[in-house]
Amino acid sequence: MATEYVTRPRALISRILSGERRYLSAAAIHGLLEREQAKVALSTVYRTLEHLQAKGQVSARVDPAGETTYVSCAGDHHHHAICRVCGKVEDVDCSALEAIGGALKAHHGFVLEDHAVEFFGRCSACA
Amino acid sequence: MATEYVTRPRALISRILSGERRYLSAAAIHGLLEREQAKVALSTVYRTLEHLQAKGQVSARVDPAGETTYVSCAGDHHHHAICRVCGKVEDVDCSALEAIGGALKAHHGFVLEDHAVEFFGRCSACA
DNA sequence: GGCCTATTTGCGAACCGTTAGCAAATCCCC
DNA sequence: GGGGATTTGCTAACGGTTCGCAAATAGGCC
Image (cartoon, rainbow over all chains, first blue to last red):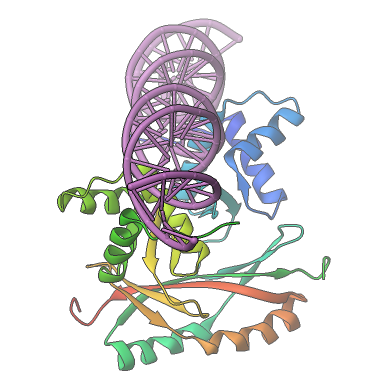
């Protein structure tokens, strides 16, 4: 059965992700690895990202250009505020949204099951 | 200067989009056109979609698989509730979100400039 | 420490949605 | 109907992502 190995590429990628609180593409991570002389194949980066996602340690976002990007991320339900200048990601809880469920039901007969929210602006350092 | 032509492919695609209130991929639209014997090149579908987007008549969304999908859509600021069963899209105004700006500023020093929201659930017909 | 087997990696080719180049067709206006 | 700008169709290229398979690695066991 599926025993899980801790390998060098996985350790490196996990470290990079928890250090950089920004959405990074697979190619960007691959680039950072090269910069520190670590030879890891791009396909390994993709597979590791998929693996970390399955473990709930990373969440993914597809940017408007269609490129998938990744941040390290605790598992519980929350949203992200993304700085347009430096890319920094802040965790946002928004219980405010639950309230909208009632309005959707009343106006459209729509039963709300889930939602996705992203905030864009400037973080404290870039304001 | 850029005079704008109304052509057969553009008319067909506009009609399909305003008829189907669901997010459709370029390939899906191309398929619908074929089904009605209209011969339009896939690249024309892409160009028309880009054109309609620029005119503010269509809005795009990149699905988790990275495929871009399109709906006809009025210009003013609102969000979409997407039925998970039939794909139907309802327009949702959510002034409730404006309130979150204050909390973001207070907790993280984050200056909110914009947001993106999507709701998922079941529409009245599919509930 | 060395061995064994399942897991993971690296490489390259394949894939798929999307974009670009260019000649032919189309639209609009006079 | 004629003429010039815009749009289309076709095909090839592109960029990100996935896949297949043999070589390398992790980790338990003697």
